Length: 333
Image 1 (cartoon, rainbow, N blue to C red):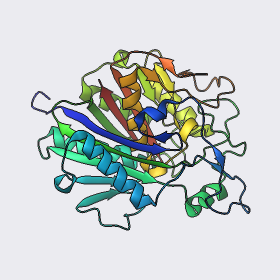
Image 2 (image 1 turned 90 degrees about the vertical axis):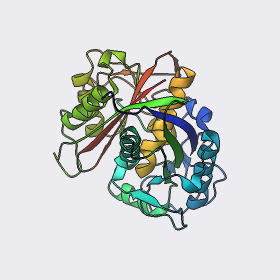
Image 3 (image 1 turned 60 degrees about the vertical axis):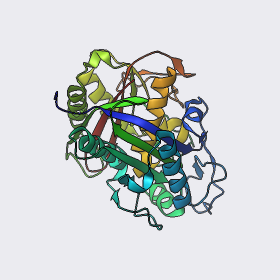
C-alpha cells in the first residue's frame, strides 16, 4: 500500500432541493413538497424534493462540472469524466464513461476514479452524477409502492413507509496529492441475495465497509460519522443497520440525508459524498430527519432533531442497490 498515491478531493459542486453549494446541504429541514413539475394526479404519491429554478438536466450537469473544476483549478477539457446517470446525457460531454448501476452508480464511479489515481493511471478525474425528478421514474417507483405514502422519508425509524425521490446534481474533482479532503478508502461487494431485497444480515455491505476501512488504514473506532444509504424502506434500513452493527463495536453518529433531499437514484453516491465531505469540513453532521421512534431492529446512533456539532477526521459514506450491490467510501480531513 505504501506505493499508492493519496487521492485528494479538490473541487465540489452540488444542487439539491436544499439549495446550491455544499454549505446549503447541512440544513435540518426536509425539502419535500407536492410535485408541480409534471402531472401526478393519477398517482398514489405526489411528493418529492424539487430544487427551485433548475435548468435542464444537461445544463445543470454542465454547471456542476464547471463549478467543481473552477474550484479545483483544473482544465475540464483535458480531465477524464465519469458520469453517474440513468442514461447518457443528450449533450456531448467529451470522453466520458457513464455508470448506470442503479443506486451505487455514483459511489462506484468515485471508487473507480480513486483506484485509477491511486495506482498512477490518472492524475485527476471529474466524477459527476445527475438526476432531476421526472415522470417516468417517478411513476415506476409509485407503481412499485416504493414511495412513502405519508410523504416523509423516515430512515431507521419505526413506521417508515418508503422513500421519496429528489433532485440531485453533483460533481467532485479528485486528484493525486493534497486538497480539501482525502478519499482514503473504498470497498465494494455483492451479496446476490435477491433481485430487490438485501441480505437481512447486511453481509454484502459489511464486507464493503471492512474493505474500505482496511484500504484507508483506519479502524472502525476511528470513524466519527456514517452517511447512511437508508432509504426509509423496511428491509433495506434493517439490513444496513445489521451491517453497521457487524463492523462497529459501538455505533458512530449516523444519518441518512435522503430524509432531507430525497433519493437521487444513480446520482445519490456523488450527492451524498459531497454532503459528507462538507459535514466533516464544517464539523456539522446532518440530521436524520423524519424520525418517529427507535426501531429495535435498527440499533444505530441516529442524529436527531438538529445537526450535531462533532469534530471528526474520518467519515464513511455507504450505498446499496438492487441486485445486492454495496459500496463504502472512507473520507479523511
